[in-house]
Length: 244
Ligand code: ATP
Image 1 (cartoon, rainbow, N blue to C red):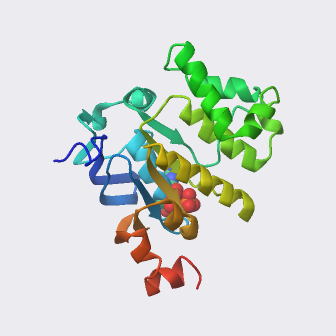
Image 2: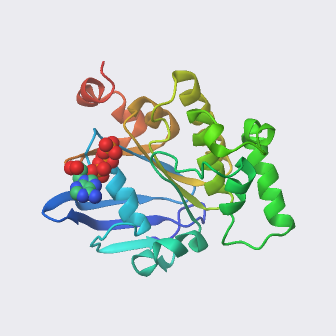
């Protein structure tokens, strides 16, 4: 099994992932990998199993899995709380910022697994560089931010742990087209910085622009895979997921 990509960065390998909620099978025998430094997308309709896939990788829902590795680390035995120590960042669906805390405090909470030192301060500076609006609003309560700003805060908070792989669950949800463009620009910038991305989205257009390859998930199973360039021209994908 390859544990690193050609770039020498750790690869996420998922083999035979299955999630059941009682009698409901939300994810069935899903296999994919995120080669180090690459951005991989998972698109699918409402209820296709996208969120369950990310939660299962994070260990947030009970799952069975044949193999779940990040580089040389066996993630199948790593608790959700300690994923961050292995370089995995997670931006949950619906943002879940701490509404009653200031923006900066939210960001600092993202660094909970790190010591507070010059390196952490440097990361905070980098997050403010990526999202200048967060710097301008650092003292404001997170609950007072707009939806787009809260999404940026959720991404910034995950970046505070200096992840090598970032899992993003529908970052475009509820955002205006302009803000979706802003999120795309951020994802492309993160890619150029060597961060690996696993992007789960209903917005196929955004996903094809942000990623190099994608899985199309239907009823918890892989229906199609391909490069994002191939899939965006596939007649079925165009009809169902791009509405063309
Ligand atoms: P969305 O885009 O709406 O977030 P999704 O593709 O992320 O959808 P999941 O949220 O993973 O899909 O849901 C997959 C299936 O599992 C759906 O049929 C859903 O109803 C079911 N499901 C999700 N969470 C639970 C739960 N906690 N208990 C029971 N069934 C659940």
